[in-house]
Image (cartoon, rainbow, N blue to C red; front, side, top):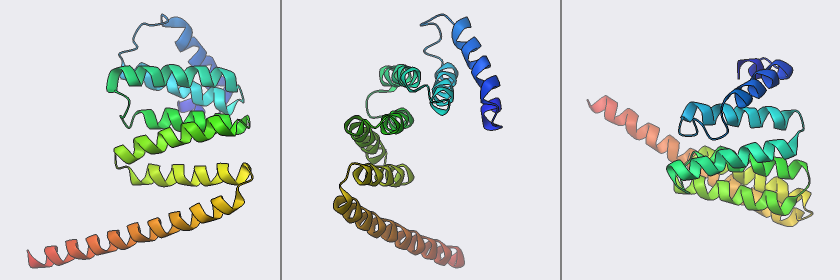
Length: 168
């Protein structure tokens, strides 16, 4: 991950390949660290444009997270979202849309607002690329209203917290 973060994708790939080759196929799949490493390997493959390999890796990560945590855990979000991005890159809009909706469903169930907004923006982009400009504009207007409501709620909560601090 360190090599990837500094932009040295080649070294990151070498070490990720080495990690995956040295660990037995199903060994350590209960280890969260290994799952995260494998997910990072998926990111590296995605960044290199090796989409079929990245899809395979992300699906393995997704399957393992489902086995360990169930189908509604927020840990599934990144894998669904990554797969949606890849399918968008290869212009498989239906698969991308389906996976993005699964990511949104997980984010909604976990009440993760930032993830919800991220996926909604992604869905709007899919609509735009798929030729549904009217729906994309309508969805964008709805999202802007939701964001404004969240910001207003945060301001009210902050004002309330400040009043409480003054009282105590």
